[in-house]
Length: 341
Image 1 (cartoon, rainbow, N blue to C red):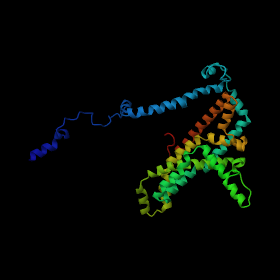
Image 2: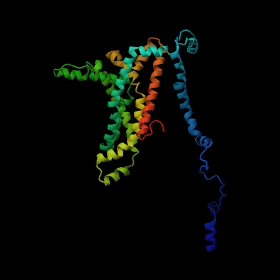
Image 3: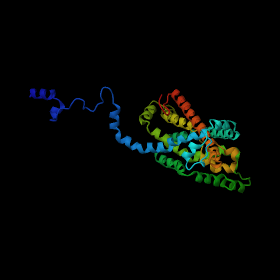
Image 4: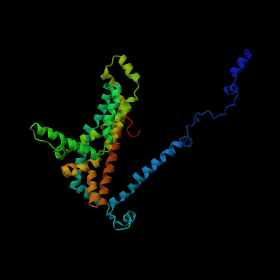
């Protein structure tokens, strides 16, 4: 019996189970030199095939149109040929003439100032609000009420800008609910929808009402990944609710905040084309003209496609530089940002 136990202990698992001995190199572990590119392609071929349609859409609708930026260095006329490609080939080259005209254009600088002012207001008022709402819902609202609160906050995200502006018009317009209540109590009515001085704040509050719920969902998803054991351990150590929020919740949100902040800074020159275009006539171009509406008016309405392309190139380069700068700041803060170092 002792001989049988010793023999069973010295035999391999394959021999004990009656199966064939496993060949060397078939253990499922990566080779000593690491996983090769060929092995990764074979392993992930199904996932890679699933991304092909998305990559094709991205290539066709985002990168191929970039070739049309060549018209920024031409005096482009789409009517000198039968199609756009032949028109690009037959249009004369003018070099940096449109960029020089942009520097001397007073309307361009006014649109740039309005764009940066709206971005600064939105970054100050809109960006922190979803974080605060997510912290409030996660810390103070009962779990049964959280789902209802998320649904109510997220619902306006699905509304079109036409509907959002209509709701604000019915509330804060000259004949809106607020004006009627003020008149019923002997005061003068107000019309916030046609006030140029308050236009930048108006579109910011419209964006808060429409899109703050989306940010709340993102930050709540980040908070859901925090282990409850951390809160229990902190509570056992005597940390109150505010200290748990400061030392556990906020550090958990830092990577997401850094990433969204970098993306927000990258879109500094894109402050809502459709939203502003719908209200531009009510307040006038002096208060509502931004780079996107300026390109629309110059390029499509006036037919100066080359000048509009030049403005678009400047906007794209400036946005890229902002992303790189913001991502560098995120790296200095110890966060990953959009990409690693």
